[in-house]
Image (cartoon, rainbow over all chains, first blue to last red):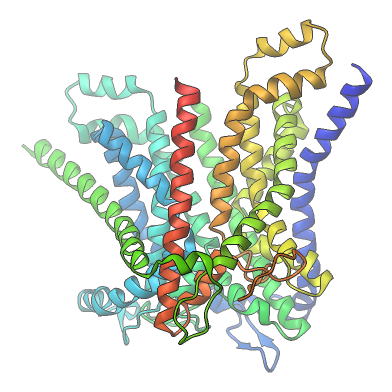
Length: 300
Length: 275
């Protein structure tokens, strides 16, 4: 190996090695900046609902609650729809039209979240208050989740906008997983006289299952970290309410709204600690998803 | 009989959910188009934002700002992504390669607002003011994983024989890597870079407390800089219908650019790879 080769290899390795370095320094720097808040509040920070910047008293519970519940609502809506859409494209309607639908779904993943947020403020939120919430209240009003006054910007509206945003992710990934299932399996089931439903149930869903779960969790990861659209429709009120119709708040939303105006050092540290909590949740969720997706796609 | 009912139910459910999934997405695009086209005019592309009540006004400074921010992001993200990707493709089969690949994966899954905070504490807190550098830096980090992965994949697609032919001619390894392998893979890498640019153009969250915003012309990268996304956000949450109309117009412009870029690049890359 010549002198030039050694230099070249070292040069490009430095760039490659900067990626893990960047990641580690990101975590370390955030931890360092959040440290004043971590020692000031301890573990009780996570379970406290206080939010009073004037008195310098803070708690993370309403934001963690808002993030988790809005993402959960998003999954409840987007998983059946996205999975159905993926089955439609890859199992039922395998033609030019199916490919166009797939392309369209992928393009929609490229639309900026602030645009979804704009639509959310002026179209979805009023629609949610006028139609979705009264209907849900009428059907399930006996549950505390669906009681109370309706409100355009609310936890439910935040969940719905997230569902729309993660639909492309879930659809595209599930489609890939479904198409990784060998055709011979489907053909054997068909040859035995199975209907399309039976073919799917017996031959496709089994091998694809852990991959589909992975796709769902990757969608969840995207929902947890999504900022702008949620900030614009969730209502931005730091309180845990029993009702989904009430305004709420999320981790990413409070950072987006208050970070530029943080006054005291503790206020800044608290917001960075919230970011750290968000970071830990998303890394854990994505790690799990990747493990599950790897399991399926590596097996083929 | 029961089998047939089940089959019918299955097909109906799948068809229904596909239709329901596409519906809100079409609604979003439809609204952006209809509301945006009504608010678009030539002023929108040539003028500064106007105060409430004044007629006209546009987003010219924000459009220029977005391109400058994307340019800074490319300066940060492309060297790391491209050289890192080449290293991964050629030498990254061992443990070090696994760690780097895994880090890139984790980096790509981080919420973009967290990366914005990183840029804030590193650059804004040090310089004691919002700046285009901080915003571009944050966007650059977001680009890195995408560019790294595309470069690695594209370099790996170059036939091994080409590499060996270069070596057999007596060329040093680094010249084979750069002048033969990289140049062959360049078309594909370029596609990946353009898709990454399209993605960061739509980012808002990492910019609101790094590049911040301004209503005036600014070409200095150590000063706050306007971007289309942050401007759309500020207009969208404002109580004035005149500004809200500008938000729709900005959205239409941004969505149009991003979708066109994505579509054209896809078509172009298909021609390159699949004949």
